[in-house]
Image 1 (cartoon, rainbow over the protein chains, first blue to last red):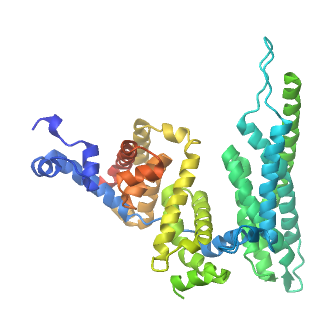
Image 2: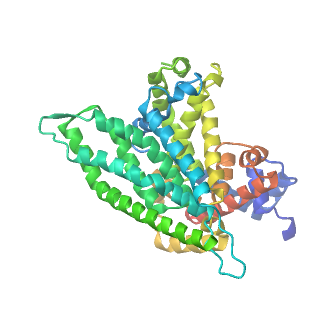
Amino acid sequence: MSEQLHLTDDDLVLHYYGEEVPRAESHLAACGACQANFTRLQRVMAFIDSAPAVEAPDGFERIAWARLQPALGAPQRGWVSWFVFSPARLAFAAGVLVLVGASFMAGRWWPPTMPAAGGPAPQIQTDAQVRERILLVDLGEHFDRSQRVLTELASADDTAGSVDISLEQSRAEQLVAANRLYRQTATTTGDAAIVAVLDDLERVLVDIAASPTTMTQEELDAVKRRIESKELLFKVRVMASQVRARQRDAIQVKSSTSTVGS
Amino acid sequence: MTDTAAVALAREGDSDAFRGLVERHSRAVYRLAHRMTGNPQDAEDVVQETFLKAYRQLGRFESRANFGTWLHRIAVNCSIDLIRGRKHQETGHDAADLDTLDAAVRDKDQRVDPSPERLMLSAEVQERVSRAMDGLTSMERAAFVLRHFEGQSIDEIGRALNLKANAAKHSIFRAVRKMRLALEPFVES
């Protein structure tokens, strides 16, 4: 049989998935080479099928709920009720409003500059730079608030046997929703360092939000160890300071581009 | 409590009932989302979006339907939304051609002992398949998962991923070629 009549690898894939491939059945019955190729494909597919799916980490159900709960409103009761009687929802909405407002103000304050005829091309602010600046506007504040919650828990006195963390828990609950928003924005702007810290921070905030309101000494020690093991407090402090510095740099860049354009 | 009963209560605003549904189904949604996105963080985001959408659309859920199946469809759509959103951010991943992958696989073959005993371990198989799937672009991965694990037709995949049927088909072909290249040495050994 001439080579040009063999079934291609793509034909075999279609045949494997039950798609119509003219002459596939009859050719496979008559051609040892194609049959061997098809058997190799089937083996690989069987190997893939035998691989168990990746499982969620232990306690994922609790974590999923803790993440979800602050964002839930009452179903089918109209959008207005979403904003009522929940500090977490209000904080989330406030975060969104800040970002939207910052986008609007960024557009007003930092208009695109036009190149002067014959002069050097000004540094045009790209969409990514604008997005980054918008993120920086509120991110420093978010890191500061998170730092306060972590510091309070890390230094909480647990010698009495149990500690009421309801205040820190309520703050953590509000921060989880905002943190997720910042993390997604940072992912979009491609800022891996910020994403990494926000990711670590979110996991600990979720843990705090999902904890009992009154913690035993052991439970509080576990939270403290969690904070310490990832050097989270240190990372958040460093990141807050870097964000402030980048904010200052961004303002300087903005000033210089505005001057060129004027 | 059955899913149907929990949905009825959740519709009335009973958050504990919805919590029960989240606890019952979040692992299955995570497995699907991880398969589609290939990344734990994205999978967690998909879980979040899936349950948020489900909660907001509880009124549309028909009590005769299976809640798990309904949720599964939402999760597939949320995964696709995320993949579409990230499509334009892919750079090196998209550029990975078969020659590069081939070289990497051959290099890996020389370093890893593929003894049958080790391959018997499901964790080892999972690791190999995961690594092979990491070599796919996000579109190839989504097309492959939808075809191979979800059993969707090429037309359905094209519509879901906003691709022409021919492009969807070629995404599957490229995915299978890469998977074969990465896995055949282990399977044949």
